[in-house]
Amino acid sequence: MLSDIEIAQKNVMEPISKIADKVGILPEELEQYGHYKAKISLDVLKRLEKKPDGKLVLVTAITPTPAGEGKSTTSIGLAQALNRVGKKAVVALREPSLGPVFGIKGGAAGGGYAQVVPMDDINLHFTGDMHAITAANNLLSAMIDNHIHHGNELRLDARQITWRRVMDMNDRALRNVVVGLGGKVCGFPRQDAFTITVASEIMAILCLAKDLEDLKARFGRIVIGCDLDGNPVHVHQLGCEGAMAMLMKDAIKPNLVQTLEHTPAIIHGGPFANIAHGCNSLLATKMALKLGDIAITEAGFGADLGAEKFMDIKCRFAGIKPDAVVIVATVRALKMHGGVDKKNLQEENVEALKKGFANLAKHIENMRLFDVPVVVGINKFISDTDEEIATLRKLCEDYGVEVALNNCWAEGGKGGVEMGEKVLKLLQKPKTPYKPLYDVNASIPEKMETIVKKVYGGDGVIFEGNAQKQIKELEAFGLDKMPICVAKTQYSLSDNPALLGAPKGFKVTVKDVRVCTGAGFIVCQTSNIMTMPGLPKVPAANRMDIDENGVITGLF
Image 1 (cartoon, rainbow, N blue to C red):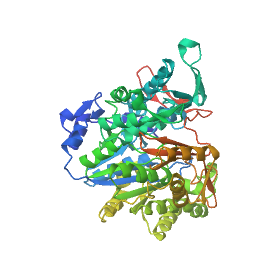
Image 2: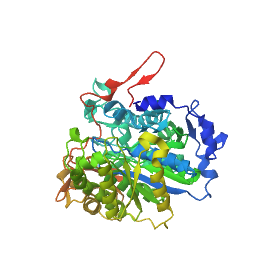
Image 3: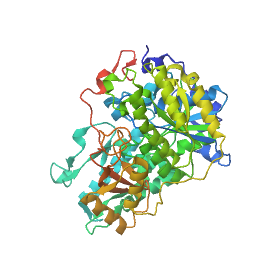
Image 4: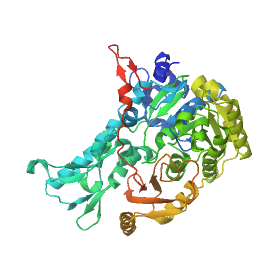
């Protein structure tokens, strides 16, 4: 059996100009990075401003397990399947981060015969977006410390600077650092910290900005900390938002690549859904809606994280709403939610599957909260038995939800035709108005309680002392009327990763509350969730290599 990277390397790609032609991108709107990848000019959106949007399909999933779910594979396979049946579909995805690529995953560009290519480029430096985000973020960090060093006209309180440096790599040693050591010429020593690039506010802004001017304005609104009187200090007071935007002049343009079956794929932005809002850029999604009849996009991790944030943050800002939602589930993962050890998932266990279905049912319920039609995509594994598949189908049917077998990993678009037909059926239904989960003008505790009770199935929220203090400060500054972005473990509906299935009777503990005024949301950080992950005992990097001819191995 070929590995993902071997399948990708054997694929014969079409020139990116040909892919652009398929969706009507003009030659002058395409900025090529070699033969097989390109930036798309934002002029496309201006030219197609009056063209009606296509249909929007959101792909989400059950609560993830080490057994695997396959959202990206499903998204890509679905786009390929829809093109096979004569529909003009475009898939819009997030960019992978080097941190998890070299840490726990080894890549994030789909899998099997449902991949985006050039897979190795996409997983590595791609078109440099991540590096531009890192540079813009760390320019601001340098400007802050430089301002303090040269007299501190803004009277910044070095003890209350909330802006962190970033790096696009998992590195636990950088979670807490001291900067400014080395004497007078090296600035004032202070405690600092690193966040992974994809969890930075710069990434969030890139993914929510409407254009370059909006990006610059959002940069200016970023709060970097407090002055000695306790008042918030913004980037525009430092005057470097223009320089930061300049570093992002190319990064703001979405990237065009292709799937293994030459379906157009727009890849742009990559925030994590467990510590950020988990959706690709608003610009990429809107571009897919203008260029295709059907746009397929995904939100990270389970529907409690990425999909909730897609609906309550991205849709709120973008003025969009999905016409249909695909919830990806696997028999293996549901058995794990039903209590089966990950070592025994190959064995048939219908009872555990029935028990684990509670997790899928909760995510179906979560999407129904937003009044969107749902289809369950069963991502098939070789080990799945006929009885297990039949049982899962019946469970879904009894729950009143459309269900389809998805064999895209093994068969590409062909394996997603049944799922594509079910999606097309849902797209014929009349679209209902946008329905957010909560009123953005409610208090922070009220909004958080709504998310915990309605989406997670919990009993309420515990705000620790520091979080309570932070909420009072945000209320005093009038910065509390924004959507909530919850930083929470992806492995459970609760904030305890050990609680699988659909747990009840729990409360979620909020340890930290911080505002991202540039992005336009408030982050509530729960339990011990880290914004700078670490590498595992045996990182994915240990399996990777490159030979004298530049051929890569081990990247999935």
